[in-house]
Length: 218
Ligand code: G3P
Image (cartoon, rainbow, N blue to C red; front, top):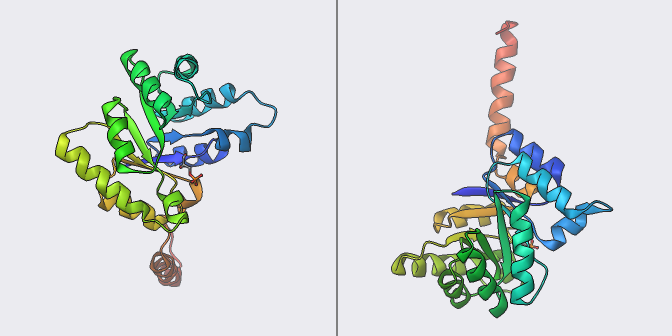
């Protein structure tokens, strides 16, 4: 499963990229507004593309098909790895089809049902982003959606990649993997939580205490 980072924070992106752990980045208007300040979002998008050599999702903010396509072309022009993110609306699906026919990669976002995921695949989306955490937030079972989309896509041979999004904790990542999501995008905090285990810390402490008794060097 590909690991994507769900952030526009350049320091966090550098930190994870430095470890070679990141296959791509997803952003959205809320994430970019958290970090941009006075900077032009396009500059930040370009920097992200320069740090990570993989798909970088950049989202349109128009709501009508024509303007989404115009914005999508501009976002795609930022870097060859840009993936144009469009919302799962009627206009978004049409814009997805238009952008795909022009050869651009697309990520259809804000997916909350298997019927929506079917339409994203029919629109030729490169990725579909089911929002697991936001379904859990309203007492639903976000992971059921990943399972259902996987079943439908496998049954009918749709090539759209399932990009599990709105990830809140490591169990979401593990379950996405177990259910066959192609990619999982997570906040930096969750990425680093994946590496933690108390037995690792305790084991390391024991190894080092024993080694130190030797008074030797490597
Ligand atoms: O990037 C889209 C998605 O991952 C947003 O997550 O935490 O705002 O529901 P969240």
